[in-house]
Structures are given as C-alpha cells and as structure tokens.
Image (cartoon, rainbow, N blue to C red):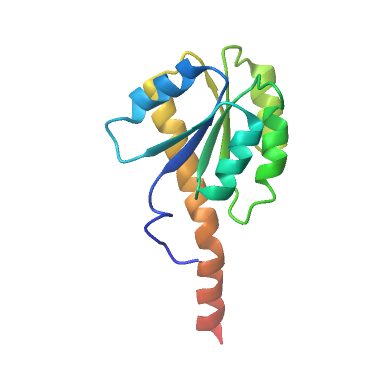
Amino acid sequence: MPPTKSTQILRFLSVSPFPEDHLSLQSVVGHSKWVLVKADRLPTALGLLGEHDISVVLCERDLMPGTWTELLENIRDLSHPPSLIVTSRLADERLWVEALNLGAWDVLAKPFDPTEVLRSVKAAWQHWYHQIQMPTGAMRMASAAS
C-alpha cells in the first residue's frame, strides 16, 4: 500500500468512559496536526474503527461494558490493525506484562504525562506505518528480483 495522505496523518482514537481522559489527550496534541477521535464505549469505538483510518488506539483498562482485551481482539481483524496502548490509573508491572504479552503496544499511566503520551503515540504510529508499508516493500523487492 503506497503512502497516502490519510496514512501519513497520525489519527488516533481515545476509548474511555472518562471525559477528562479525552480532554487531557486533546490538550497534549492540540498544538499538532494529529487528529484525536473519541469514544466513551467499546461499541462506539468499534464503529469508529470501521469508519476512520485509525493508526493508534489508547484504551482505558476499565471499560464498561467491554474490556481493552476485547478491543484488541477486534483490532486484529482489521486489514491495517492500529497499535493499541492501554491506559490506567493503576498502570503497574502486572498490567504492563499482560498487555505486552497479549499484543498491546504500550501501557500509559494516568494522569497522562505529556512527554510520555507523545513518545508512546509517535512510536506506536511509526510501528503501524511501517507495518502497512511492509507488503509494498516486499512486492518491490520481489519485482526487482524477477
């Protein structure tokens, strides 16, 4: 898939029942060209993932109804699955190990540290972007070899 304008824009989804999470993230990225999409529940998030080209998802650990692991399972079915970052006020080593072992990109503690949010989201976007570029690069290498 060649780079398009939509894949070069960092569009990320915040999934949290807490309005302060969305406000905090908006204040961190408000100065940038990054686009924040917001959902307060899992069904809303799944609908937005189907409607928008989302590259990174930040998901509150304690969703109701639903869980971040359910969101992760649904993300895997997408053609270009976004990187998932789990967020929690109780971001301890246990959650970090569980999240990474299940396939999440990172875990961020709340309240959000702006530097950590920017670092983690940017790295997650770069990972996503390189993943969608890999098939294109592999096809170019195969063409060049033949």
